[in-house]
Amino acid sequence: MADRQVALVTGVSSGIGEATARALARDGYRVFGTVRSPDGVVPEGVERVSLDVRDEASIAAAVADILARAGRIDALVNNAGATILGAIEETDTAQAQALFDVNFFGAARVTRAVLPTMRAQRAGRVVFVSSVVGFVPAPFMGFYAASKHALEGYSESLDHEVRALGIRAILVEPGFMRTKLDKNATVAARKIGDYAEARERVGAHLNANVESGSDPALVAGTIAAALRARRPNLRYPVGKGAGTLATLRRFVPASLFDRSLRKEFRLDGAR
Image (cartoon, rainbow, N blue to C red; front, side, top):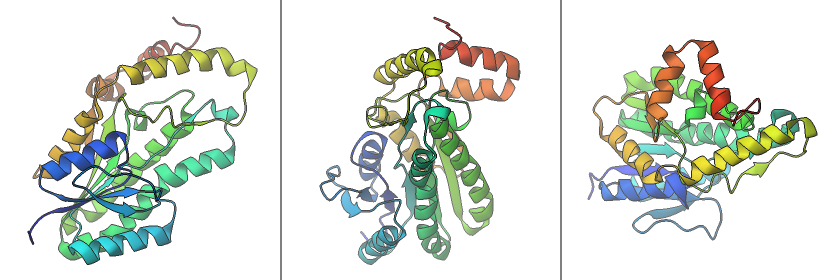
């Protein structure tokens, strides 16, 4: 169908990206899903695109290919991401830079590549898969939180720049989800004994919450609804407690929020 909406979703081989690609295909989009590896698999009904968000030439080639095949891009979902587990002091600068290259600059590169098409169309939606740690701290995932905080500032600024051109930027902020993000995480380069006990407690807490987290399909449904909305919100917290956490962050006194967060993450020996 000539009028079929076209969506580009990055990182569709598993987790939120896979669920989102499936959901948008069900909604009637012509979905192009990106994978970095030549062996990467995309969901049924999704058109495979090789793309590395760290590589400008790869992105340019992928976007050109989509435009040649479909003629338009109506929605971009910046989902590709990675994480690092470990204390900030334990993490090499090179590791942190590599993380930002995917989580922040990767999304910025792909967004810049599709914006000319969306401007010409005078229409488009750009979704950024952020996290609740885009607006709260994440002990022992500090650089991951920093990359998501950066993404939030970028997305909100972008939304103000492009809104008059018919384009909207949208942040989706999942809480704990049952994905492979923790299993695929990079481990900080060194171990420092002073952090060992707290790191172990926080790690166990994170693993338990991921195992009991929400289905990534919940995030996919939120993204699909945001793309359908005539006037989308800037932010969509999603998952167990995510909306409550966003409200608490805005309205609870800083000292009280600080104590609550330290208790939640089992810091100061809290059990």
